[in-house]
Length: 462
Image (tube, rainbow, N blue to C red; front, side, top):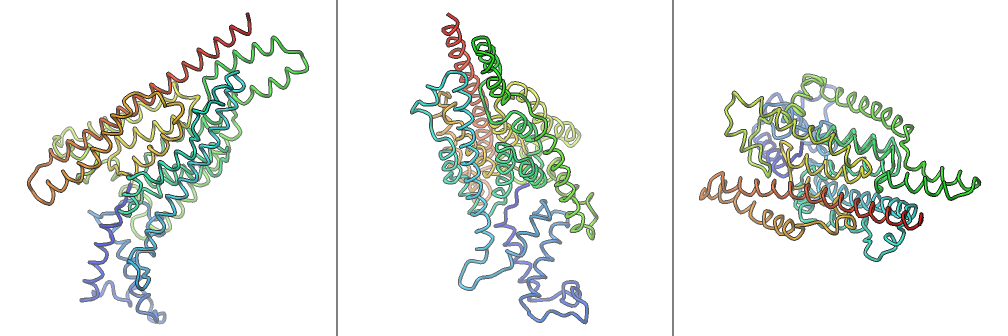
């Protein structure tokens, strides 16, 4: 669940001004501290009152915030910390900037691992001339630049959206899986799922990354090459070949460690959340106001998704049915894609991210920034993707028209909901085209590798 801190802060300031003009007994300093422990600084009183207001807005019905109390604990003190002569929310803005920079660095590091793994795989298949081709782009650097200078990333950061922290956790999980660090991968996945729920489906590509390693050509090509080399090699060199091919055998040890650390981090997060919410209904109330809010979609405020308009028009009698249909669409595509793209887990994570961004209850432009950054990791494999110029033009057009249509409808009153919903439909269609064309281009790339490897094997046999 993404929090728009810009509007949230303005609401806090309004509450603070009202509080300073006419203090209420419930929020008085004496109600917050015992008589023998009164704070000596009025700034401390104001900070405590504002943090209390933050938490009350979390538990009150109709609140603007339905996210993690841990994230609220991290950002809450920064909202009340003032630096003389500087903007009010400078510290909070710096947190989002740092999160985006770290995310770009992790994407770059993951891209380097993918490049090394891809070059090793091509060399083993006898297709090393492809990896030495000058057309192979430094995908890690390219992807980091795409994410860091993406207009969607900049807009989300300027708007004080917490999507920067959610993206950081997702990329941290993928990076930990690429480097086969189960504790890091488990921490990133647990925190990403805790913050937004939808990254839960990324457990499949994370497990595939830990088990098989980074993306590689289809595994059947390795077994063909292995059988040919073993037949033509002496007994002294066969052991080395066996060790080389073991890289493509599923390894259970890091997966078991990942599941262990996932259980450990999940327990730790639940304990911390339980401590924070024990005075406000416990964990059940937390789940109801976070994950329940995401799954039931009670807030139909306009956003860049399509569900708000649909559920505003649908009859209440069919609401539960369509909730199951829309959320089930994400789960129905998980297994088929995993079976077809199990040899490319990083690309599978990218596809899952696009699908969840398209069908989630409350999407934001930060979701687009994440999957566009991940898309840069596969610049070489997807270089022949069709409709790339159309997609680029479509994203630019939607980015420009969406705020215009929103302004005409909400602020000027010269349009209606269909004006803005048209841009949301176009945005969803662009994401569908991106998924279809990227998967098709990746499969075509694998077919090309299969043909070249088969031709090379036939030449060796002849």
